[in-house]
Image (cartoon, rainbow, N blue to C red; front, side, top):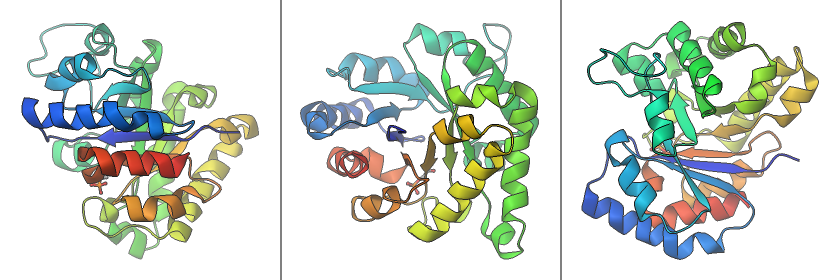
Length: 251
Ligand code: 13P
């Protein structure tokens, strides 16, 4: 039985004041959530502030990116996995479509980052997903398989026991256009069957989150699909009531 996992990707949003309001709301209400793993991923500069503001052990903290170089060095503007661990980060989102599209991160770079995270005991949340153009031109499965294959080649299938996958169709991110539960389930099943070709055991265990315009009113139906094990939530994770409602829907 896979345990549902819901993570909030705050992207580049928030201020000390707004984050304090958000975290206070989470502290007050997280007790209402059942047996669900929960994490929030603030902008890196706020990670310590969030960790110190959280009064509950029920919410883990993650980062939204990290450097390929594991420790320290002359890499202006970057933060390493060692630094994330120093501030008790348990997760790191890697390969988000915004990193791929805006900052030009390649499959190979993302795969190396996954390896560095795993070697240092930080759980990668590996994002994969197709654009609308790729979906409409019929190459969706090839795109997702290529994204996964780069990581499989770098770390091997067994490592996927310690990787969370987030399927995020690019066309559903921040657009209000959610994949229908059936559309999402189809891709989740594809991802699981692809991994099962290498290890049926790992494929059954791997957590696959759905991300893309998940809201309190569509979360339960998405999460009820057999291969959807929770969500990676953008906009709705910036509101405590909405995020808690989504976490409850995964319980
Ligand atoms: P939205 O929930 O705002 O569509 O964002 C999804 C996302 O990109 C999470 O990583």
